Image 1 (cartoon, rainbow, N blue to C red):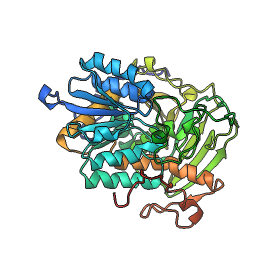
Image 2: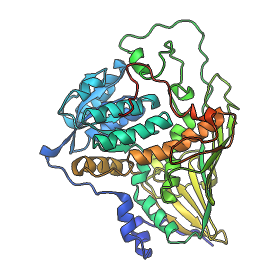
Image 3: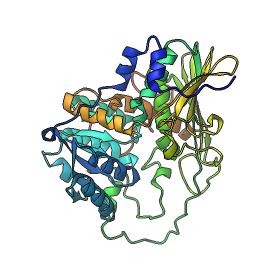
Amino acid sequence: MNAPQPLTRRQFVTRSATAGASVALLAGPRRTQAAPASKVTLGIMGLGGRGAYLAQAFANRPDTNIAYICDVDTRKFARTRDAVEEAQGKAPKQVQDFRRILEDKSVDAIVNATPDHWHVPAAILACQAGKDVYVEKPMSHNAWEGRKLIEAAEKYKRVIQVGMQSRSARYLADAVEHIRGGKLGDVHVIRVFNMMQHFPRKKPTGAPVAVPAGYDHDLWCGPAPLLPYDPSRRWLDQWEFSCGAIPGDAVHQLDLARVLLGDRPFPDTVVHSGGVNALTDGREIPDTQMVLYEYGKLTLIFESALWTPYMTKTPTTRRDKGEMPNWPFNATRIEVLGTKGLMYFGRHGDGWQVFNEKAESVVSVAGRQADKEHQDNFLDCIRSRKEATANARQGHYSAMLSHLANISFRVGNRKLTFDARTETFPDAPEANRFLKRTYRAPWAVSDPV
């Protein structure tokens, strides 16, 4: 049987008798065109690749004003400043310390695109200063601080949007409706993949290196230990700064897997297999992660590696063209295995496809990237004071899948039982010590927030 041509979202919804209400609910509020007087004023924190992109994306909108850009490395200012000025006709202020943004009462929200270890500490300070927050994924560096951001959002009545943008995609809502309608039968296994190729990092020589002019290394380390400046350090490979290169990317698919199965919060158990197997260059965080999560009668299988050149992500230029990926070699796919059919689902606009009991392709739905829709939702929620699509609670649940896997690895790839009520491991005190980090003054996350 020939594979059907990809359906548009409109065609698919027309064919689905039960689609309407659920699709609208999952997609979140629609964007409302803002009058000039209601522009949302933003500060951008972190000007790496993602931060520079978000700065330009928000600057290109008619309903926002980028008042500040911020980075501990002032050498990054020029590129983003020029792009923002060209887009909005006015240059933003440039500050090295994000607290200067928080002091400005005219700023409505910050966009936090810093490394993992700065996500929650800066977001909580922003909440306390009365700012809403768009924070990049993974939301938290560790389990404890994720719960603290939920508490801060509730206490200070702040909008939090986590940068898990595929959660705002319309084609995701259609896939959820397909599963809820029983078209796949009973789902007992879901597989999440995150395959890519990294190269060994350059090992430090051990010789002292001077901190460059314009770079505040102390502030970059922030809540983490003040380690010697090392320009060859990849923060993604070090526990003090990161959850790891794999979970830092795979949180997109893990979040989508949760949505596809009804936003289940925590698994009952987790067991990790793998470690630093291929890239033996001094990294601390695994380059190979195979993880099993048990949710009652459902098993979530996570497979990932940093040494697989034959597995590829869909190029950005192809994501909005309605083409189905070559699923077996798609590096970021999700497989939903039901008793009646198999669904392949792709992040960032890759679409989804269903095969029946005869291995025939029976549904093929084109996707579209959802960055704009995710930004729409954030800005709409700033105005309406509703919860965002990827709020702090959902950000915490999805990041926790990475934290749980890492903790299982750090206690010897041991199978762990997790208590969702206390968010602890009742039978493994040695695992509980990895739920929270030690914070460096003055950046400790307070309890209560």
